[in-house]
Length: 94
Image 1 (cartoon, rainbow, N blue to C red):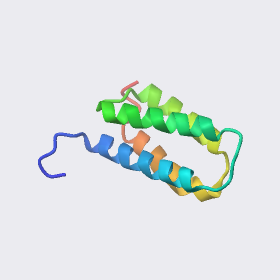
Image 2 (cartoon, rainbow, N blue to C red; image 1 turned 90 degrees about the vertical axis):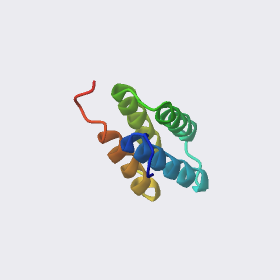
Image 3 (tube, rainbow, N blue to C red; image 1 turned 60 degrees about the vertical axis):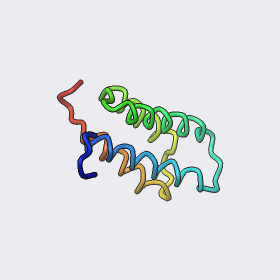
């Protein structure tokens, strides 16, 4: 993104959330908390689009997504990418 003023952490978060949303949408299995995962991914996307997300809210949404997806290994890589993107915002900003 040459010439962009956008925070690279936000760019990473948006990309990671988009990937997980795509993979979740394509996942054929229905599970009880799918709606929760989809809602929290939408919330993460909205926070990222806002430009400067609040770290506690990012973490809360990440925990809800992780809990909703559970141990579905097919989504583990994309979920790990979202977790890594949230961690880019660091602990010191709470």
